[in-house]
Image 1: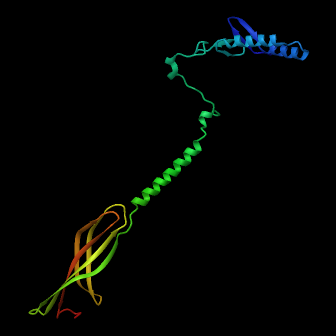
Image 2 (image 1 turned 60 degrees about the vertical axis):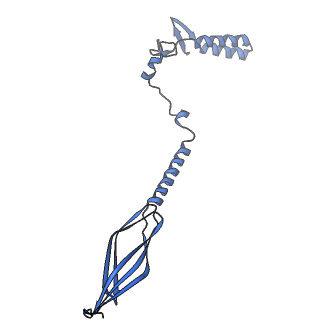
Image 3 (image 1 turned 90 degrees about the vertical axis):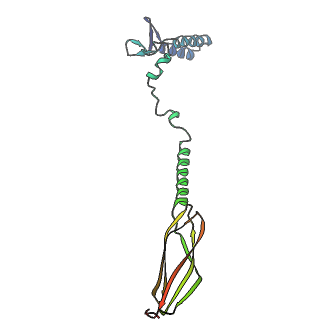
Length: 210
């Protein structure tokens, strides 16, 4: 059973010629001229229009009308069917691109977490710098003003605002003075800042700790 190409009522059988030439080769009668004739016939077949084989009749391709080409105006109206095994759907560097994307995302996330993750501000007391003492003889009191210094260290990569500072003076676990500072200072990134504060202490005969 051979496949036939049909055009204008004429038909041409492909398999019988091939089988016949094969028999001639076995008999030693198939020469180069026969091969050349077969090549010419195949070229003639290649010039046939694009048709659809339905088993009995052949139908000319409705898109290209048998020419094998389509007008440029119909390019956007056609749908191309690409086999799943096509190499264009399986680029060789897909895995490499995926790995690089994951590595870059992890690196970017690590950098963002490192620079923007908040770190605690370190506060160190530098001790008392100045003490002023006044005696109130009529009231039998002693007034003291103690000035101290606090060192603030900002290990973050962004500025930190110190909104409030509260300090207390203790004497034998008893609070004898309190001082609060509001909107004290702004510490720049990766820098240090000193803040001075003064606490007033009153010591008199009525104080239970004297």
